[in-house]
Length: 151
Image (cartoon, rainbow, N blue to C red; front, side):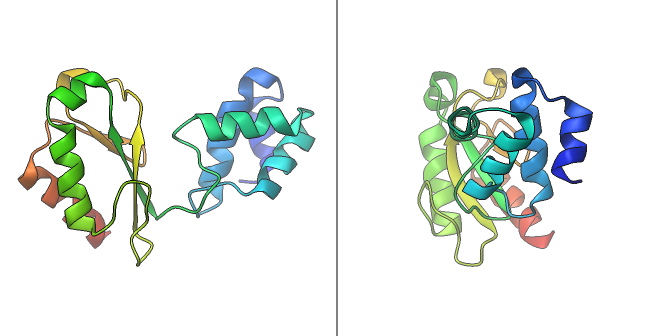
C-alpha cells in the first residue's frame, strides 16, 4: 500500500499520524522508517518534520533504525520486572547471542525493551510483531524462538 492510500484510508489530520506511520512502516518490509520516509509523511500530511520525527521516535512500535525481521520487545515495567523479566532478558540474550538493542547477524531478530504492553496479568511478557506472549519461562521462550526461526 502506498503512502497516499494509507493517508486516504486513515486520514490526514494530526491525530491520525501514529496510525499512518505504523501502516507505512509495515509496507516497507524492513521494520523501520528512514528520514526520507518521515519527510515524505510530513509533506503529504502537511505536518512539521519535527512532529513526525518525535512521534516516530517516541513509540516502541516504530523505529528509525534498522531492525530484524522479527522485533522482540520485552516489557520492562514493574509487574513484568518483579515476575521475572530480568531472567527472560538473560534467556533471550543467550538464545539469540545478542544484547538488548541489537540485531542478530542473520537479520532475523532484534531485541528491544518496551513500556507496558497491557498484559500485566500474564507477566512477564514479550511482543513479537504485534503478538503478545505471556507467562514466560525458559521452555516457552525456546519454543517461541524456534517457531519464528522456522517461518
